Amino acid sequence: MLVSQLESILFVASKPLGVKKLAKALNVSAEEVLTVVTELRAKYNVENSGVVIVENNDEYQMVASPDNQTVAENFIKAEVSGELTRPQLETLTVISYCGPITKPELEQIRGVNCALILRNLMMRGLVKERDDATNLLPTYEVTMDYLRRLGLNSLHELPDYATLHNHEYLTAARATQPTV
Image (cartoon, rainbow, N blue to C red; front, side):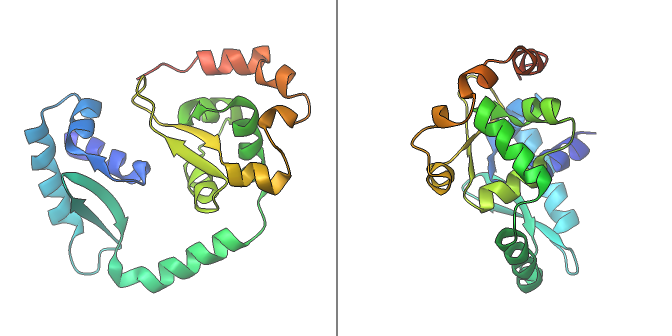
């Protein structure tokens, strides 16, 4: 079970995670995390695997295999250079009016998984992830580049920002998400 849980965290995180943070998230010791990471590396870091687990300074991340670098880069380039999809625009709108916002809060409001959309928006430089000291989960907010592209000096210049930012539905939706 611990192997499965750690594997899921590394998969959805899409960023390097330290042993201490993983141990805290899983409520286990750092030694247990290292044992499981060793198991996962033995499973994934083999020939013909599409993903590998890399390590740097006691941080671990699940990434695409270097053997597939060209195909992965071509896919990413096509994803980033195209027009924004409707789900991406909806996600940007929610983050604009509700941010900073956690992924579970965003998903509660939108009603769908937003992991890939968030990744794509971050790769485009429209959204950034920020670690929150009071919460295990990072928060997401729009970037200065996003504001610049819209020609805004502040999010407060968005139509009906004050009303929508404090709307009772959004406040209630965010309140239903437990803090980790």
